[in-house]
Amino acid sequence: MHKVLYLLGELNDTDVEWLIASGVVQRVPVGAAIIEEGQPTKALYIVLAGELAASVRALGGKEIGRLVCGAVAGEMSFIDGRPPSATVRAREDAQILAIPRDLLAVKLRQDTGFAARFYRALAIFLSNRLRGNIEMLSGTKLPQLDEDLFEVDEVDSDVMDTLFLAGQRFDRMLKRLTGG
Image (tube, rainbow, N blue to C red):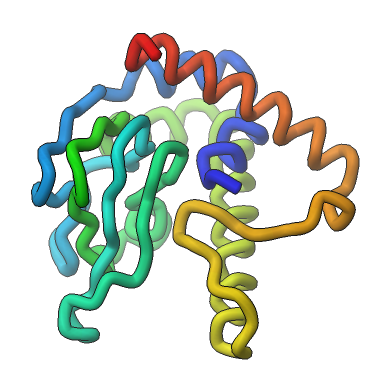
């Protein structure tokens, strides 16, 4: 499942409009990095088109995952304030929505409802990522950074409704921001 669906499923329509209005659509040429391992991040990123790859220096620059349309990047550093633990670079020309870190921090301080919804969404998808990492370490299937593998019958019907709404919101976002 695309990580942005967690975010857009928890936020309301007004929150999503704020993200669209506050974010900056950027083109990322092949090879360019949006996040550099060890360097402070400037934004929270949502991938709108193209493909990016995350790699880690400690692993010899080994690619640890790919991010495609709907992936969210920079969330860990946003939450804990520490430098990123990976570099995220475009594998092909890409388009992203960059939500400036400073602007997002102000919104979170000023709008407690938005903050509660935003942090809940991040907690849910970081928890889901941790579960995926545990599955990987235990030898079961490895999920991509931008998706989780699940069986439809394992998902609660309320969660399915939220995902459907989030998918509609993301489709609207893509149409408005990319003309797609």
